[in-house]
Image (cartoon, rainbow, N blue to C red; front, side):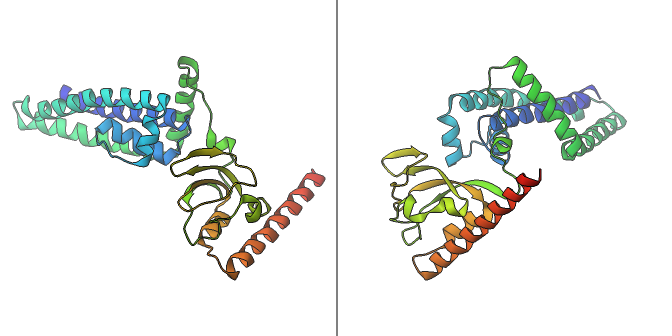
Length: 255
């Protein structure tokens, strides 16, 4: 029975550790879904190789978080497996084994309900944020809040297609600002990254562009080809943006 309780405590601690690591990774700029995936991969030793993994390894703070998580994960998994084996090996009677099994099942159900609870998640996140801010030198920034990634606003990184509307055109020619779209940066193949490029910057095939704006506008941009449809789509979103700005101005005057 003691082994069963130990197993439940180890699993609970493992969930808490991965949650702390997830929030810490979010504070370095990763999205919540990406941070959750990377934290669980590192803790379990999955070692999945992705572009995001490369970004983590090139970032000193993220690399330190993942390194510590891998060390803790190895110890935690070994301990959990040992406790699970002892739960069914040590007891001399079937009744004791059954009690141990029931403790594990009940504990896992409670843990699962806690993980799925939005109230628990919010409370835990607040506590972890305070602890990270107080006991670490990690810069605490909620990038989703800073960039207002809600109300259908998104940040994505996408590649310029050879036959795409943006290809071989400057930012001034594209006039994306009139659509309410902002180019945060462009990574040019074999050249490097250009942050906040100027209007004379020309988009080339296979450039990776980091874009901020409304999701529907970004989706429209990457669906446009070099034809008359592209210009009509551009004009449609320019008009939408003008209406939005006019509405915002009215709200400001009324406030």
